[in-house]
Amino acid sequence: HAAEAQRTDLMTITRHVLNEQGRHPESRGDFTILLSHIVLGCKFVASAVNKAGLAKLIGLAGDTNGEEQKKLDVLSNEVFVKALVSSGRTCVLVSEENEEAIIVDAPLRGNHEFDKIMVTVSSHQKLHGYCVCFDPLDGSSNIDCGVSIGTIFGIYMIKDKDNVTLDDVLQPGTDMLAAGYCMYGSSCTLVLSTGNGVNGFTLDPSLGEFILTHPNIKIPNIGKIYSVNEGNAKNWDAPTAKFVEKCKFPQDGSPSKSLRYIGSMVADVHRTLLYGGIFLYPADQKSPNGKLRVLYEVFPMSFLMEQAGGQAFTGKQRALELVPRKIHDRSPIFLGSYDDVEDIKALYASES
Ligand code: AHG
Ligand code: MN
Ligand code: MN
Ligand code: MN
Image (tube, rainbow, N blue to C red; front, side, top):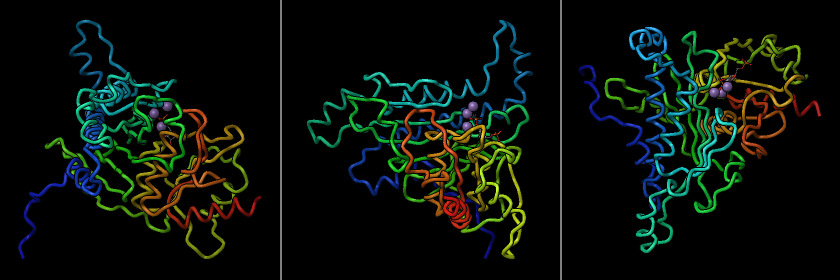
């Protein structure tokens, strides 16, 4: 049997999401439209990241009118906000880079002319409106040295498009419709769940398309790696300290774990998802709620972990059951392989 010929039947991310939509006959493609605008943002950032090392050079060549190069995180945020609003399917946006939530102007929440026609056909065929919570550029301390960075997003469906409030985003993570991240690494990978498992797509730069390369990702039940900023150890609480001690000096005959920490949540979580293990950003005495943000870091990653067969825990409860009170709320987080998260849960349980 000859070597497999080059693949000619490509599962693009759009084709994949349209297939998934086939299971929801009421859906009219609004989610596909929203997602294609997110994908556009990711492609833009991927291209900007690839050119970042050359920015000074490009700047020198074009520096005729003294125009200053925008910082990559500011640029990424602008691109995502504009791409999301222009999808015509968003109502509220929460970005790490904007102090206030963005309430999208009513005329931009959907094509109202079309809406009116559809309403006469069938009331449940109104355009769907969405809330998107996102971290446009995660791992910003790694930009200048060329280490992997990413974008994280979580998507909610809006209840009433004509009456949009902050409460539409201050919902528990269990209400999320979809979540994902894009990692700008040695290749550009977009990992997505619409609540039916997790799939990974890799950008083929020659096609400009994300192609399904990691179908139905499942995280191993137990892993050989733990991932944490150990420089904060002196301020940890007892369960976290005990857990990390156990990773290094296991008393039950199990092998000790390796430590890997990149400092970009997207990259650390991506490795955890594919190889197994645990990622933690615990509380400490200086930051009683840890560092990571509930709406656009903790929730999307917890959703993906659960969808891949892993778990996500805050030290007190299942992470997705948190109810944020403010849009930039933080929470401690322990996420990854099912059995590894069971271990930290047991340590917290035995403490109280
Ligand atoms: P951001 O770059 O979006 O502000 O997020 C940085 C986050 C996250 O990516 C990472 O897991 C964490 O900060 C690392 O924090 P430490 O430097 O405290 O370890
Ligand atoms: Mn971040
Ligand atoms: Mn960020
Ligand atoms: Mn930041």
